[in-house]
Image (cartoon, rainbow, N blue to C red; front, side, top):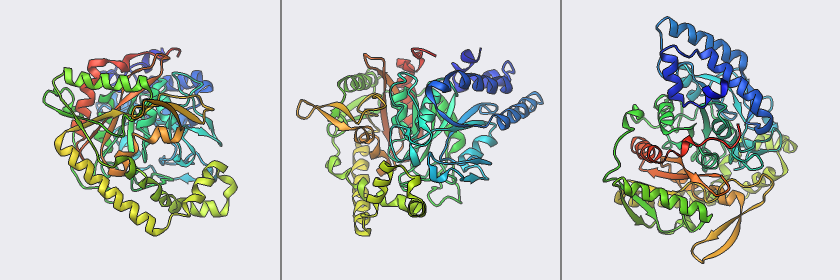
Length: 476
């Protein structure tokens, strides 16, 4: 029964709760039953908040029975990535140095979700300090991809992605400073939304390494569920210096719009240059689906993108603002691999950082120019599907030279997602198919700033036409 319940989307569960054919208590118990059955294999969670969750579920049941239904999030379980503060828990961000980091208050996004009636059922595993793409965590263990448990789920929000993909929870929160929502969404076959930078409050985000590119985003099985979460999460927060005062929307109202006449840009450079051939073919087929629905598909070029993406290295010093005291006091509490990356950040001078930001501004202008010609950009989310947990490199095809090559996994995974972080643009990954080995991959759509309605409408149109999200796991 638990597995049957959790095969439903969040909105399907919400409808059952609203008509009182499903109790929030029954649903939360189903989540923990599912965790008992699957966590030994997948290791998505680092903390379960069962006592609090069941108390809140009973309260929700009472409120709904009394006619005080708050809306479609009321009584729905949500998992929270463990670098986002949840009141009265340890928020360790996957790090040994933060193992005692007790957070007395909810992050603003968690507060908003709880105010709408959502129930936090636990904290999910992530790459150490959210600085990596595999969720092979040296302190809390590796999270495994439910589609192929010998492979990575992506990162750094790998625990949240795997929990949603594995039907453990219908909704989860992740963070995305170089693709950490969209990248694991692609590898796990779910939806991951990175809102415009400033659309969602960052207050309560712990251990953000590049705060000027970071975002908090929903991770769900359907686009409609992502729209539902964004409706509550979005909005100005005067206590967050990065929050931008722009009106948000009832994003679900945009779903169902036709894409006829929508201008979809397909980059001729960078995004398809290095790619797994099956992913490349699958994403181009996804783009043809837009054309079939009446969208105007055209090629575009973003000049010098390959070279400008090196600006990311100049921004790495931002992370030291947070981690420097821990790194100096207890370097042994940071894994050797991450410690080496952090030490390298000390070599980034102020002039390097300033130049990197100038390049970032130029990059924003280049994307803005292209997005005056088209409404959306369509690309692969990740250039590879999930790879074995112990892999150091991943194979790709170089379509520029028609040769096969290998890339370090971290380079491969952030390649296509990081541009939206440097530019602050909204971007979504939606399931786009499977390789012959049964591994999912995603289509990435990117829009102009604060055009999440358009982004969600286009993603929903593709999702409903293809139904990739309905494919069942090979084993539950």
